[in-house]
Amino acid sequence: MNKSWKRLPFLFSLLFLVGLVIFSFLYTLVLKDHIKDPPVLLYDGNGNMTKARPFPPSFDFPFGVDRFGHNLFWSVIDGAKYTILIGLSVSLLRVGLSVCFGIIYGIYLQKMRQFFTTFERAFRFIPAILLVLLFFDVNLFGNSTKGFSYIASIVIWLTIVALPSLVHVVGNEVIHFNREDFITASRAIGATKFRIIRKHVMPFLRTRALLMIVQQMISVLLLLVHLGIVRVFVGGRHIIQIDSVSKVILPSTNEWSALIGVSYQELMLDQWIVFGPSIAFILTLLACNVMKRMLEGTEEKVVVPIAGKTHSKEIKQLKKSDFTFAEAVVINKGIKEFQ
Image (cartoon, rainbow, N blue to C red; front, top):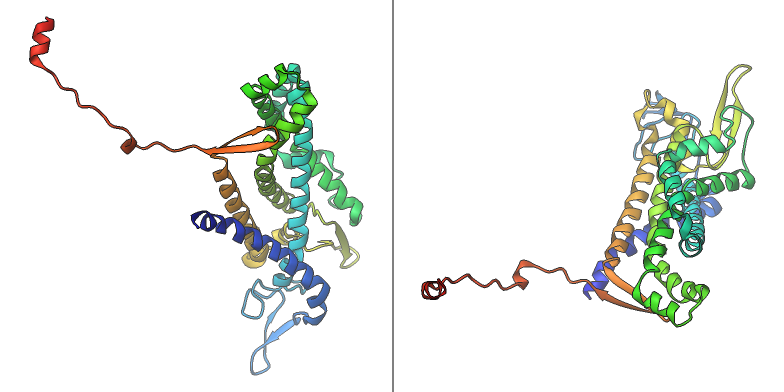
């Protein structure tokens, strides 16, 4: 019963993310056509105009309405599927590739460990957003960009920028795990490297894969916010020509970082304009952090995979009350005899 209660925060966080994605698809496929667009002007009971767009948050518009007439609450709901699924896709790619390359590095390329360590330490100090902007074709003021190829290319670069660090971490774990006594014994009785990988290394990494996915999900979401601020819209963008001189760059999707980026310059006029997507990011990051903390709690168990089976034993935290301290008793007579 106690274990079930301990799992509740993890389950609630997971259900929140899954429910948000399902509701987002439900809005796009069913509800969107039945919801009226916000009005251009607001009037009081006497018919006098009180406000023109953008509208601040209110009971009718919880997150407000931007100057383009978008109800930001429904924009956030619509963008949930893009943000969460892109973050999950990048996280899965990062972890999957890092496990594959980390095993190769930890098993077959141990002699190059010094080179990889030096490269990873130098790579670590370069901000990930700078690498994306450096290698990805970011044409901030050029033609419209949208479609699957654009999203796929930026997902690939979001994956690549984290691989050196992740491969180094996974490879080092494999190297240390490969020095365990039962691995040495398996190797001594003739087990091949492939069998050791299949029977021991893979079960060992499988217990850590879910935690790594959640950790990378948090990292990707934060990186998306940074990209949105510099107006790199992951879901693509299109350009609206207002007149012969002025033009506006708008995101092709309601991905949350794009909602922040497109309104970032209006913060001095309407501070509430990024309230909706910011709240969505905060709640999603909170859910991911709760899941991460719960998964880190399971790491307190010592996992020893032997012949495809996982034997776990909890590490008992010793307390002061577990020890009995003997009082020092000085016997004068014994001391005198000794002297």
